[in-house]
Amino acid sequence: MTEILRAFWKEKRPERIAVLVSGILFAVIFWIYKIPVEIAGYAFLLVILWNVIWFTLVFIRYEKRQRILEENQGKIRTEAGGFPEAESRESEMYQELIRQLYEEKKELESSVQIEKQELSDYYSMWVHQIKTPIAALGVLIQSGEELEEVQESPKAQELTRSMKMEVFRIEQYVDMVLTYLRMGSATSDYAFRICSLEEIVRQAVRKYSQMFIMTRTRLHLEIQDQKILTDEKWLTFVIEQIFSNAVKYARGGEISIYTEDKTLVIADDGIGIAEEDLPRIFEKGFTGYNGRANKKSTGIGLYLCKTIIDRLHHTIWIESKPEKGTKVYLNFDRESRRIE
Image (cartoon, rainbow, N blue to C red):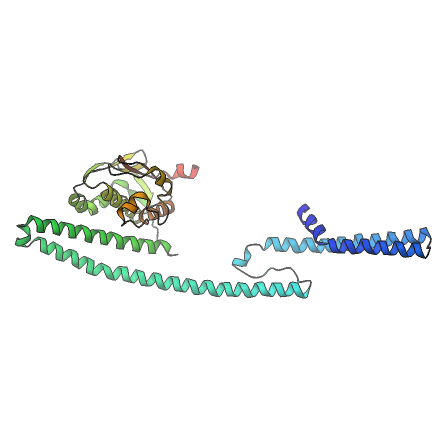
């Protein structure tokens, strides 16, 4: 109320000045014509009383309009109504202008949404179509491995392993694109149920087993099985992304997977992450020093992991030291997350 009264007093400054000037003019006229003080006093009293009544009525109307406007703040996103009654032609025109802007905004949003959906549909179709030639390429490489000429040539075997590794990476990038598209969809499906953490991890390990072998990466697995409430598909994707980074930066090293209470830890003895990069590693598109040196990083993997983990109501954080390795922590204690 105090703020409204202050605003009203400020906005009605011209009217106050007009009343004051009128009073001065009346006083001058009464003095010139020598009108008795009693009559002049009564006249001034009536004028003051009328102005008090008028300003009070105007303030009540002003306060009501302000309340209506405050209640409708923010509603312009969903509707262009709820305006107080227009007191002048100017106010009416402003309200009509707002309605027109709202309609234009709705049309623009609809157009953008349609374009976005069409683009998403196109990429989804492309991702599903590209999987067929990738799978066919994998079969061809596997068939080539069985050829006698390849089996007798170490160089050919090494080339075949490299090809298999690159095909696997292509599959991972395609899956990443598909996941990114699904995350942006309003119909993203999350099916929460009680799952075995050990089974989810072993499923991801099986998928990456060939990659571990081809990169000569040692794997140390020591998981205390526990039941967690999660979405198996989305959590598996997160763990696979962490494996992908661990293999990339710890090639020929060792990856350890173990549990600490309700936390899954995936550690590698790779090149680590620069201290100044750690606060930003979950930002979309951020690659850091390692990414710039590698020149192949997209800065999307960890961003997707963080986004998915947040939607699953889990927690993720990373500890790392350059040249000593990296530890990724996934905590599944939903109670502690709520307390935080």
